[in-house]
Length: 58
Image (cartoon, rainbow, N blue to C red; front, side, top):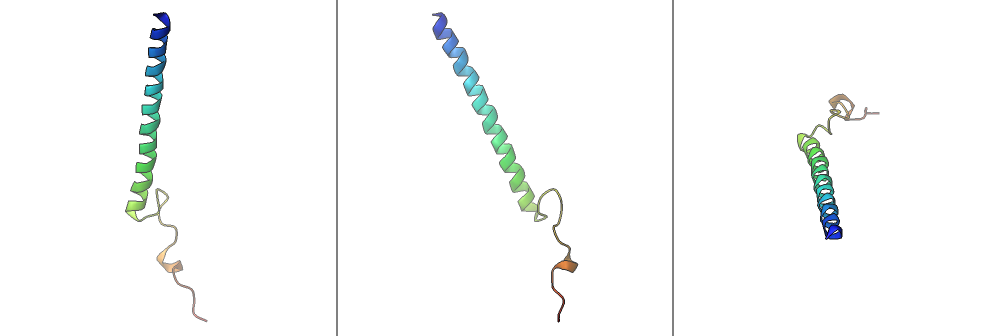
């Protein structure tokens, strides 16, 4: 009986860990999507300014 109870406790712990990792993965993916959706290349802001977009004519 004691082994069965220990098995159930271990099983519950593994399920808790899996849920935590799943939520963390969703949070990471959600953060990346949010940064791309803005169009501002993530939390750092724009990568280049409009002035640097075109090269100078020869």
